[in-house]
Image (cartoon, rainbow, N blue to C red; front, side, top):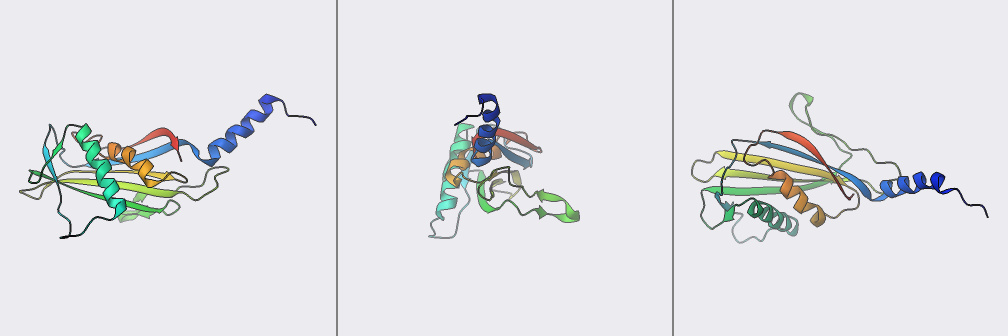
Length: 180
């Protein structure tokens, strides 16, 4: 039996490994509003009376609270700033367009050797002045994943969604080496 020389075999191994479940994960981040500076006191927006949030939303809320606390924010029952979040999952092969065919979210193609269809995971946050109702900050972060579970991705999405909370108004992409 004859083996391939190591240099010829290495690119094949890399292609299979990167195509399967590892590689650069692209995080799309968008934000807007006036921003929130300093260590503002926050409270969660009230939900429907007596309803427990679904598990997907409860996990997102936990990740978002951890990201905000890491940035110096505190939570209380009555606060000047109200926090609302949303989490969504959809097939990544679907593109979303807005007014005048503006791309809100582009469709993602499968990578070479990828063995499953990507899902787009999105986390949004809105901070509102409790007295006036003015939106102070709106942020969102989204990633496409084939293998990674939502609970693996939520901490990174939460940190990205609030990364520019003091100076919003940007749209950018970040790359992380993570499970796809």
